[in-house]
Image (tube, rainbow, N blue to C red; front, top):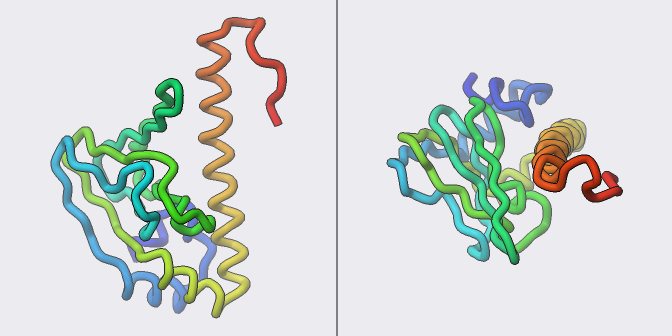
Length: 151
């Protein structure tokens, strides 16, 4: 089961995973293609199958994160209650990703509260790792006397 390799879905029951796979589609993208763009409607969660995707946020500067790990989730804004994506996801190599409609995913997870809790716990862990990486990048730019608060 392909979804089992995705960090956010690892602990879910097989029946829940089958329901999620049933609503999913596979996207094949060439370099330069965007899975989604900042400011656009946050409608889907994506799971990287293979390739490289640059997540970027431009608000008075440019912050980027490279997604290269099979099973990593992208487009978390869609399941976190945001109406719009907060970042853009540009494929920088031939990329394959699973697209999961957020409204349908939410309905499945609400019907299976234990699976929903496991999903969101794992999503928070993934986002925490990205946050720590960005802290490291900020420190490398500012040196040892960089910003003082880390959460």
